[in-house]
Image (tube, rainbow, N blue to C red):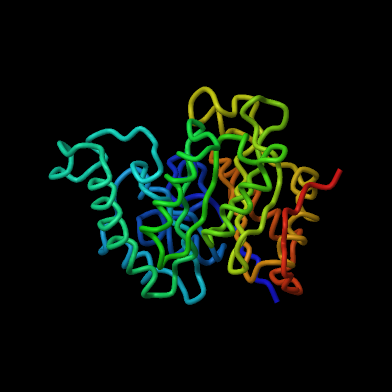
Length: 298
């Protein structure tokens, strides 16, 4: 049977804290995570994207969550080619040239910081989210491959933010690349019809795990402030559109993570709760030789 875990992209967003979703007495760092873990079995940790995590912090995350809980941990911005301010790096690395040696060192410290989750069996996957500036081609493939080589002993998921990776004939090449790298391809839901909109394809590139991230359907996707880009309240009908894709993905993967990133007030936790009501916690699993791409229903 395939486990389907539904949760949100973060548990400390200020808008969520202000929404009143956390009850009185559960609003300190420990209480928030413990409360979240009573409601959902998976969460995305996005703070390591902004600053390297410490083993002490991730060790506390593991201690505050039950067996079977999963953290999907975003990679640091420098590791994925995003613009990175010097202040996002440890003080002793801020004057270092932005070269392969720096990437190797940042990776080593990032891995050290995440390792308590792996040792406690709380790690779902590392999430390498690549910026829209990373367009398909040999240089981009080499960049992703180098990252995978550093993380060769880790679960590794890739989300592309440039839609060209999943359009037309390129989709097959992208699937082949991630399959060869034993990397989970991350499917996404965004507003349709914009030049920056991501196609709602659900590729399965490793049998261990499939990931779907729901970013909301704001018409400001790709532009504006964070609140503009991710402000959306999913309807039940919008989530129901994804059920055939999730069922197809579940036929090819041992575990499916569904994460909501429409992080305005309590919209993400509300959408996650709705999705959980629409899906069983487990689905029959049937391993296929060639998963291909689970394309959206017409």
